[in-house]
Image (cartoon, rainbow, N blue to C red; front, top):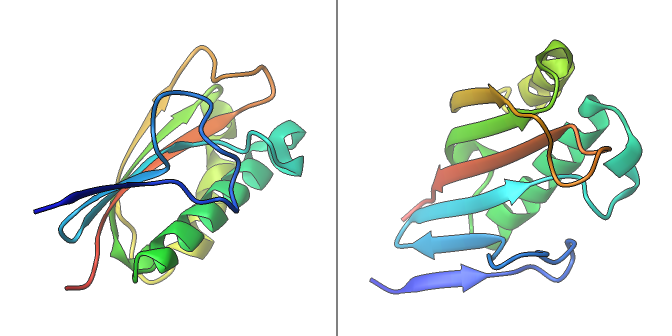
Length: 126
């Protein structure tokens, strides 16, 4: 099976040595994403989560899927006390079924304004 590495011009381009997504068969791995380069970059964790999940929605649609295809997310937050606000946004986007999830508190993410980073794994339709 071919491995397809892809970036999406409508989103801020990766600043490091990685791609927005990597697809192998019907598996789609979405790189850790933040609100960097968007107005939400200096916003609260809910606004940042919203931007990230909208980005995931666009990446999944570009690959023939939707957020319903997400089976696993990993979330990195700088302050676990803010995590419930992010969870409320996640409930809206994953209303039809929650993916498996891991959440970890970290010391920092990229810049001092970034409060959350999320990565995802999806199983796309055949």
